[in-house]
Image 1 (cartoon, protein in one colour):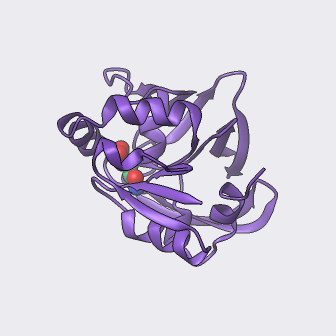
Image 2 (image 1 turned 60 degrees about the vertical axis):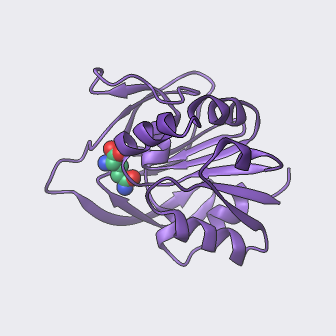
Length: 185
Ligand code: GLN
């Protein structure tokens, strides 16, 4: 598969590395024309406010929205924020606004800035979950299913071809989740 990684900012290299280790072609996406011919895209973690600004600046916002409406998409952390239809605090307008969830940015406060736990993710047992200034899935629309939970909180969701995680699978050596995401159905 040809798999794009949105490469404006954030944990781009780590996702590209996972994609390549699984035998796929990884493509950095910085411009609208780089979406052509891709089978899937990954929106990495980083800072969603910076990504919003850069998407607008390079004219990627609308072409990317069109792409993610029909193609396999994985958003991790800030990438999940880009996908959400509703962002809390509610002063923030949605960015791509394609996934029917309410997501709360920086929901774990300063004491829990970064933390890890292990849990079951989409049937994958004992998966390492790494959280960095993570958002929280506060509400899910009716067509959104839960992929993963940690300490009673929803940390991964899926609606059809759109996957969103509040943790960072790319920062571990565990490739099972990328493999499952990129497995042909
Ligand atoms: N706190 C960041 C944001 O609000 C997300 C953090 C991350 O991607 N690790 O965009």
